[in-house]
Length: 250
Ligand SMILES: [Zn+2]
Image (cartoon, rainbow, N blue to C red; front, side, top):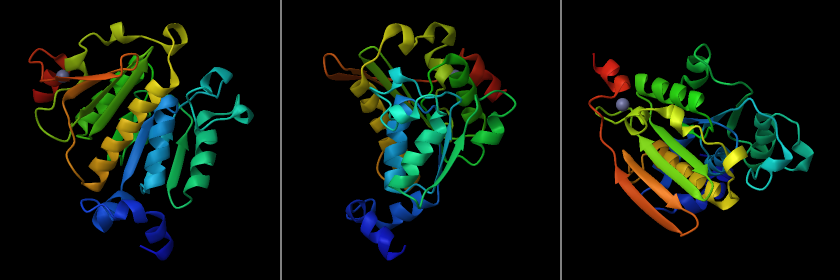
């Protein structure tokens, strides 16, 4: 680690259970963020700030005026520009030493392996059922830990799946019929700080996984009620009838 890096990361290096070992581990790891909306913006900001080795950012969307209240990497000048390019520009200024790989595409069965390969952790920051299912199934098949976030209206949810460990429940154990989860911020509304709260938590979990620091709560659904200000937790277990997990075991 050079002198600049020692200075830049000095405050986190002071943490006894992070220190140089955590930093070096982090700097050799790749995080993949699927979705460059509100969750992805916040998570990317902290991962890049902390010095993750490389960050892949995947989204096919362009910046819209209605994104600006919660998608904090974008400004009016970015409207109609691809989100991943606008995000890359902002993130690269914050920390030039991080390799940032923007992918302006929608994940599908053909490209998912190409774009998620080499991920040490995946952050599910997307907003639609098809992509979420695709990413979770890929992560489960390739034993890649996945930190999943979602936010709608005043509510947020966070759950980490240790697909790198046996007997981890999968997303479809939690939501057997994902088609019911087609909630959209466009129709249902969302408030910025709720998205930010979940995105920050995703970044924290990813940092701990990548640096090998601390405990990661996994297989636990954490629900945040932004209106009341409360968190609730529910432990998940593998559903013996989950078709996804059953396929894995056979
Ligand atoms: Zn399952």
